[in-house]
Image (cartoon, rainbow, N blue to C red; front, side, top):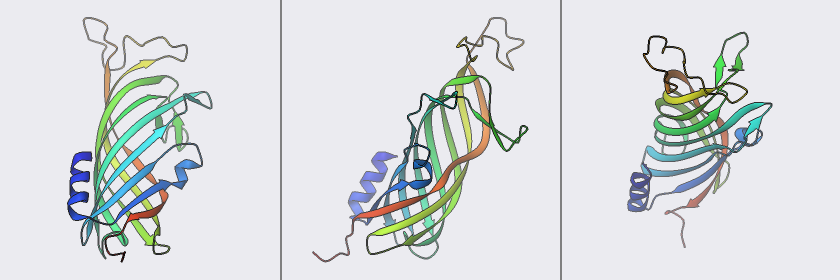
Length: 199
């Protein structure tokens, strides 16, 4: 994805924005993005989301997500409403979130260490604040496939995870599939490349 992004961006000498998600930054999660226009109505985005927190409120909270996204803008590239498609890979050490289990968002009591992949769709709206600055609001929903080991609060590995009851030998390596949001935020961006700008 990164090679494709850099190749298309360099070939087109296109306008390129560097952005930072202000919503995630309020809780200490780092989410920079690089968006490069590849046609009059579309762009490619590289998105990195990283939580440096080993623990947060007693929960394991470390993860890293590398995501590539294609955007189609209805008005013109990097302006107005858009729809998107993305693919991602991730690693995590996390008390995983769960939705509508007693409250809107809660955390599982045990934690998992592993990796995963995801793909999904989203939508958003981007608006120029000035010649160089912009604001980008977005939401994406993905199907996530993850593989991991689960551990108790004390750090003991679960050798018999759910779904392995009939295995002949203990097997801690587990897998799951979830449909859930992967991107949500409000980013502020700065145009670092502008091919139309007169030198």
